[in-house]
Amino acid sequence: MGLIAEIRLRAKYVIGPVLGICVVAYFAYHVVQGDRGMIAWWNLKQRVASARAVLHEISETRRTIQHRVSLLHPGSLDRDMLDERARLMLNYGQEDELIIFPKPTKAPREN
Image (cartoon, rainbow, N blue to C red; front, side):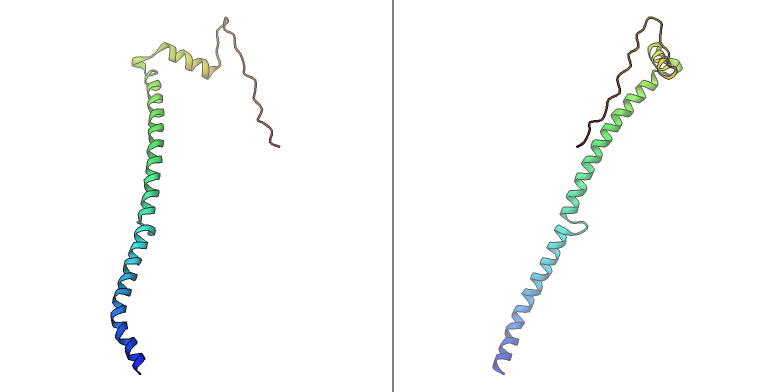
């Protein structure tokens, strides 16, 4: 019975630190790997950066289109812009113009 009593006596001093280490390990794991952990935060940060890049590109495209549309408003009609759009939409050209049609490009063959 001496061995069992010795184990019980030492177990009182070991259980507390072991449980403490388990609790700390549990929280440390979830700080890194959890749904709101550091890895998830890093992935979210990368997605935000790529979304901002796309936003910047789209806003530049929007500004360009908005400028071209503003040139077509009746109050500030740009004759060159009107001529360009009419030629494009109606397939018009003048008699002294030379029209060059580009050759259709073939897709490279895959072996």
